[in-house]
Image (cartoon, rainbow, N blue to C red; front, side, top):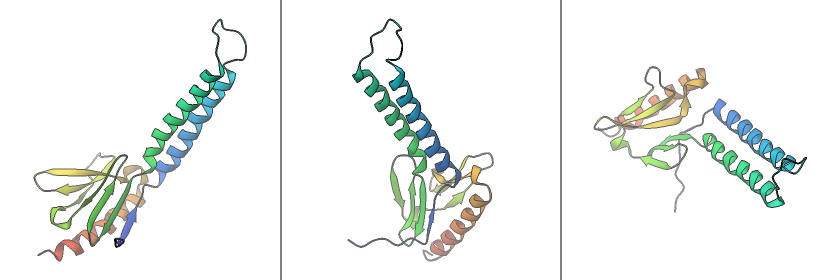
Length: 150
C-alpha cells in the first residue's frame, strides 16, 4: 500500500487550544467532585465506586470535547480529504467544484455537484488571517488540480 502525498495539510489554530483546556478543566472538576464526595455527611452514602464513576464520566466528557481538535483538510493529487469531528472522506477531483466561505459561516466548505457541500471545520472564522491564508492556498491548489481535468 502506498502512502498518499498531500500538498497542504490545514488544521484549525485556536480551537484545539480551547478543546485541550476545556477537556482538562472538565476532567479535573469531575475528579475533584469525586474526591470530595465522601467529605462531610449529606445523608447519602457514597462509595468508592461512585467516586471512580464520576471521574470516568469526566474523562468521557473530556474525550468528547477533544474531538474538536481533530478537524483537518488535506489537498493533493488524490483530491480533497476532509476530517471533521467524526469521519474522514476523500473527495476525488471530479466531484470537487470549489471551496467557499459563506458570509456569517463559522467554517469553510467544499462545494460538490447538485448544490451539495461538505463542511470543512479545519478552516474556521475564529482563526481570521490564518483562515484567509489557508483559503487562498486551498483555492490555488484546487485551481491547479481542476485545470488538469479539462
